[in-house]
Image (tube, rainbow, N blue to C red; front, side):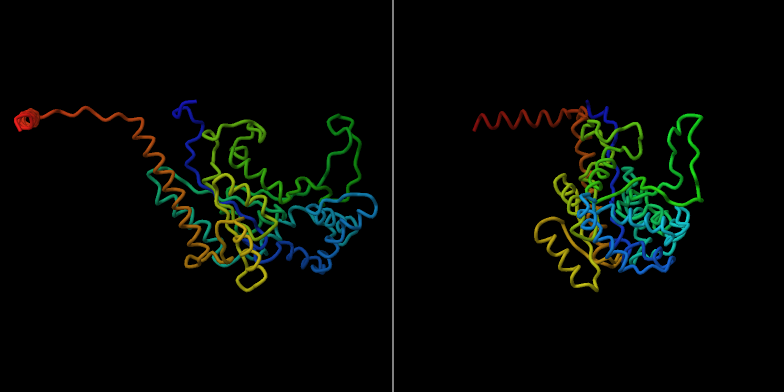
Length: 337
């Protein structure tokens, strides 16, 4: 395919964000536990013990979906009575954000959009989280993002033979979550990176497994920065590093253990840089993001100009007769010498 036939101009830059302990100082479920009067520490202790509990019964339980299953168990047993997607969305409004948010999202977009307006370069923000999508959509960050990939619940599930007119009636006690619709784990985040890379999220007709040439992908991975808080995001960090993208690890500046954890990621070359979960304009994290977004955009501009120079021939230049005569005289003088 010739350059002029490219499907995408590839003038989009993307920041891909984890949520818990990256954009939010703690786990987003805190307002949910508070709403139902549930001991948060006890809940997570139960979740962490579930894989071993089921292993004794010969069942392998994925750690990443254990908490989702346990929440549904709490719903069925009345501990989280009436939990539905609408309530999760409303509780999302109570999720606190780290310093500088959500303003940093818009200011970074404005910086790219205004500085590189002549080249039509723009910045998009995406959230990739093992947390709950409806809570993220209800949070103050939602209006500033271009897509959220996170775990979701189904409320009223489809009954047997639901495609037939004679579908079996299903007993229903009201609008509550009943099933896991989309579990998001740390390895599935890597699949989402390629969905965004290929543009599947914007064009449903594209399949994630379809072969799409790198020059035709909507957002090259080298135009991406992935920001997250720790070792659980190593698979996503690796995808970024192996494909020319940037990986940035954040830590709570008041937590020495988290600082040591991100420093280890840096020492083992898992990430390009680390910084505190502070996104105010004068913070090192914001300044690093702005600097490297600028470097990505400058590279796009340079590539565009180089391509233009290669494809546009130098225009003919009028030859001045006087210059031609001077050259002949110089040549003669050279021969006489």
